[in-house]
Length: 263
Length: 354
Image (cartoon, rainbow over all chains, first blue to last red; front, side):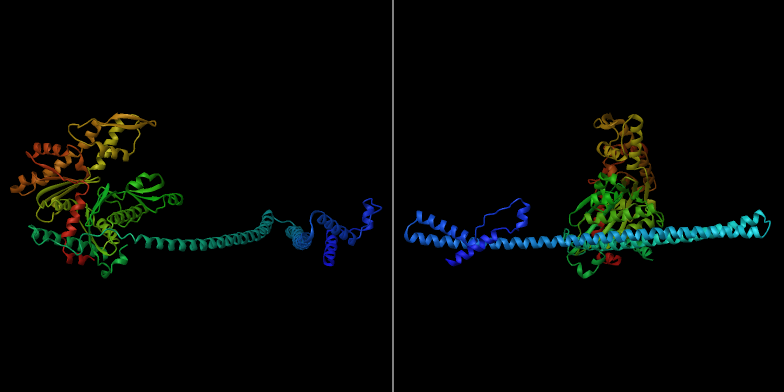
């Protein structure tokens, strides 16, 4: 009987929820009625016994009481299993949430890294263009300075120097553009090679299937000829001699034709 | 197909003879396994990948190709009795026609349903005046599918098949050409043969022109004209009125084409009679009477109703008389003759060509 009391106490304890005085105060509860676990368990047991006593007699009452106790303990155990499963699910959910958080953190890091990279790239490009602009301006200034220092200069000379400068700049740009175009072509070629490789694979697969189909077709054996061996002119043919001559002429013409073809 | 089967030891089952009539309009085969098949001499290749996937075939032949011609590149590899391909086949069109001819010959042989374990010997009736290059191309195409192949003159094979080897004049009216051949117990020589291109296709062209002139608004294709001719053709007295329906602005409209069909078919009579006259007039005088009483009409054109009577009538005017016979099977006459030649060819002759 003591085992049942303990189990009942434990069950009540598990089914109860824990709270603190402060939390109750926050909820507006200032006074509580306290009932001990042993007392609750004793009350339940007494209620069960009283109910059984009023409905059953003698040995039956003891059997039913034992069965009820056993059932109650089974229910408790099942409740424990449910709680265990519940806690397992909660643990998995927590783990998933942690993983999700980690992923979110990673994504945020990646995004910020990308943003940083883009921010760094832009000034670099701008700086490069700025530098190149400066170089061109410097070259123009040098020409103008040289012209100014050299005294009066003909228009042809100015045109020549400026053309040289422009051609210098343009040829650099052309080289860069050509390199970029070449890179693009290389990339296209590589893509096409990959595509060709893939197609070649498909082709060999198709060829294989075709061979299989051909093999199946060869199962259609055709229709047998009525002749088992080469015939030739019938011995009793009235025009055998005439026909022999004709056959020989046909053969001769065909031999000539086919020899010419192979030659 | 046969290249891997050329091993003599593998050919133990028997010998299949195939006779083939390679014609401009249709190609017919007769074989010693009882197969007799004919296919229109048209070849179609899918125009693009989409049509290829839809048709599920790389090449289509005959009626099937004609039915699906809108999604096919169509080739009629023979023209006026010979392969369109000539000489070195340098240009794309010539190469394509050569390939179409080769595929057509392959298909005709497949139609004969040869067994892989049988020797296959084939005789092909080719136009009497086909060029050497043309003959070579036909032989090469056939060699890929058979163990040995021979060519012979088309009208000769008709006469041989009918066992009419002496004093007979064969008039083989095909689609591309009409071939006349004089038989006198030996292989016909050049002087024994005449060929001209007034034949089935020429009749179609004249009929198309006459319909165009006399039936305003009628819509038709040359294939429709060909079908009309095959259904209604006649010369002389009309056996019935040729009432046909042709679309006019999409609406089927009935036309009476009796006169047009008679006129178109009649263009054959004069050149045939001229050819007959020439071959009879240059024959041994002692045998001329016999020859002119043994004129044999063969080929698809011989199915024109009243043609034999019309030729006899013309012969009476020019030659004082004559007798024209029709062969029983115009479509298979050439192929049957070629089959008979293949059968009668001695074994050692075939061996020399393997």
